[in-house]
Amino acid sequence: MRLIFSFLCVLVLSSYAIAYDPLDPNGNITIKWDVMSWTPDGYLATVTINNFQTFRHIMNPGWTLGWTWAKKEVIWSMVGAQTTEQGDCSKFKGNIPHCCKKIPTVVDLLPGVPYNQQFTNCCKGGVVSAWGQDPTQSVSAFQVSVGQAGTSNKTVKLPKNFTLLAPGPGYTCGRAKIVPPTNFLTPDRRRKTQALMTWNVTCTYSQFLASKNPSCCLSLSSFYNETITPCPHCACGCQKKKNCVKNEAKILSMVGVHTPKKDNEPLMQCTHHMCPIRVHWHVKNNYKDYWRVKIAITNFNYRMNYSLWSLAIQHPNLNNITQVFSFNYKPLQPYGSINDTGMFYGMKYFNDLLMEAGAKGNIQSEVLLQKNQDTFTFKQGWAFPHKVYFNGDECRLPPPDTYPFLPNSAPTSLVNFKALIFSLFLLLALL
Ligand SMILES: *[C@@H]1O[C@H](CO)[C@@H](O)[C@H](O)[C@H]1NC(C)=O
Ligand SMILES: *[C@@H]1O[C@H](CO)[C@@H](O)[C@H](O)[C@H]1NC(C)=O
Ligand SMILES: *[C@@H]1O[C@H](CO)[C@@H](O)[C@H](O)[C@H]1NC(C)=O
Ligand SMILES: *[C@@H]1O[C@H](CO)[C@@H](O)[C@H](O)[C@H]1NC(C)=O
Ligand SMILES: *[C@@H]1O[C@H](CO)[C@@H](O)[C@H](O)[C@H]1NC(C)=O
Ligand SMILES: *[C@@H]1O[C@H](CO)[C@@H](O)[C@H](O)[C@H]1NC(C)=O
Ligand SMILES: *[C@@H]1O[C@H](CO)[C@@H](O)[C@H](O)[C@H]1NC(C)=O
Ligand SMILES: *[C@@H]1O[C@H](CO)[C@@H](O)[C@H](O)[C@H]1NC(C)=O
Image (cartoon, rainbow, N blue to C red):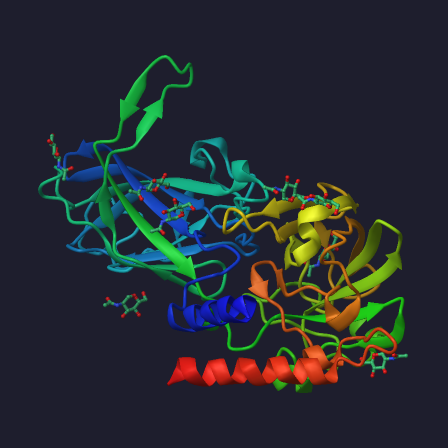
């Protein structure tokens, strides 16, 4: 009963406060501006993008950051990033700014740019790791020299209306806020310096804003029932069905198929679920004190290699995970004491890249869990996960009444009773 109620709370919460993620309630991306010096007509700032999300990274083709200048600012120069357009700088004679647009659009530089265009933590093509996966790579930064801007903390006006594509939509950024100035240690760590002024912008993710359909689904099977519970039909929406690839042989000979499109529009293998990613959870073995699960991730998108992929899973037995084969694992504790959520991700240079659809677009792992004799059961779908996220997006799960049943444990009456209570609560909550 309490479980149902807390689930309901989460449900209600997540549908109202759209940017709330129950598995990563404190996750956000912050954009920090540190004014390092005042210049004759403006300032020189270091802009740092920190990804504090536990399991949502910024993947290829990277972030795009925009804002609206408060006054008539221009960007004299940039190091470690660039604006995509210069805009109209015709009123400048002699020294021409890097960008004169009222709403500049900034992207990271690609790896391998000349040394003098580089800046600490720049030039990764806008790819930023998730904090939980690799905190050292969860930051991106560039330097910007702003002109016509005000030359003291009294006259400068903060930029407004920040927008972040990372790489697609989904993020909402708040207003820039003046915060206590950042402290910096010199490389020899013997002297501390301080920014002249610092402001922060916080951006949060909402899957509803990113896309109206999920981008992955879950299928299930078990050793005790030969039924394979497939992903729900059209789990990710069937609008793309008309463009999907039926015959692999034909598509493989086409030119340019394997190049991602700018808008990341997928080119998918035809499936009944039409998801670019399918996660499969197979309950493989039952031992006396342990049980074993096989997890497989399949890529159905011909236009995407998923680098730095991650899989976040919620299952009550993850508090007793004993061994994980060929994936990395990290327990997540969004609520401190409840230890039922964890993150799986690839091993560097081995399987951290999930290749495009086809023969190699598949990775798998096995997980050994110790039974907690008080709670362990194969009944009523207990052995299957409650939530699954791939790359930070929640996957669609099959309806519980289609899960593989333990023979002779017809759970119908109980399930229906629970469903009844649940819908009653739902009704009450919505009234
Ligand atoms: C952003 O995330 C960090 C790290 O989880 C957290 O400390 C901070 O409070 C968050 N900021 C906001 C505005 O939620
Ligand atoms: C501003 O952002 C930085 C990270 O970029 C963070 O460490 C700091 O706590 C933030 N300050 C506030 C007041 O949120
Ligand atoms: C502006 O700078 C002065 C010192 O130069 C400092 O006392 C003041 O707190 C600063 N104001 C802001 C908003 O940073
Ligand atoms: C904020 O920026 C977006 C995109 O740059 C733009 O479409 C929108 O009109 C801006 N809103 C305001 C209030 O300036
Ligand atoms: C994926 O990676 C392989 C090997 O690095 C490459 O040949 C292929 O073109 C890539 N596909 C895409 C869609 O980027
Ligand atoms: C949570 O589960 C992990 C994985 O079994 C374990 O290593 C960790 O100690 C647990 N933490 C707590 C607080 O129980
Ligand atoms: C793991 O399972 C064993 C046996 O049931 C139990 O004694 C132990 O407390 C469990 N560990 C956690 C972190 O729940
Ligand atoms: C296997 O599970 C399905 C539900 O997915 C159920 O209809 C079927 O009766 C089960 N098979 C056995 C042998 O219990």
